[in-house]
Image (cartoon, rainbow, N blue to C red; front, side, top):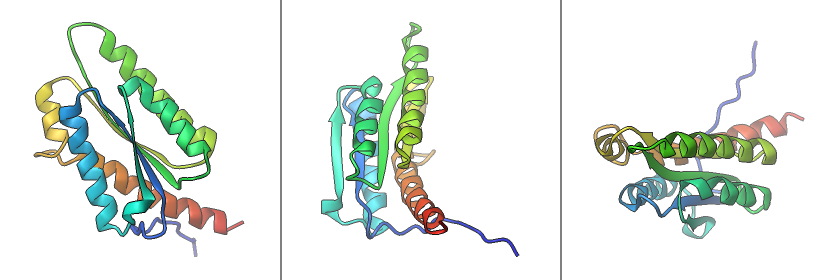
Length: 158
């Protein structure tokens, strides 16, 4: 019979850092509110959640890597919005941010989740930051809670 490892959606004993880009604040504040709501509803204590603000999306991975490597947090949730414009800037930033967030998790072994909108339009960003497509901040926080519990379960198998 196989043994299954699945994360519980219980954040009661977790310390979580939220890295939030100030650029595109109209959207990132909604992502932050969604993430905070998710963590609260799943039992995280207010004083166990730290919000770290950075200038923009490009700065998110460095802060995430630093927080993950500190040993002070069980998970890091990254929240930002990169919206396509008339120049190639979107492609440059979105790719590097994605790579950096993934690298922070791999380098540290700490769940670093991706609540970074990368949209073609402002309307898509509105939809993903709390309207008809849900709130990707909530989703990233929920993924963090689940992954912390999965990793704890996997480490207990040793």
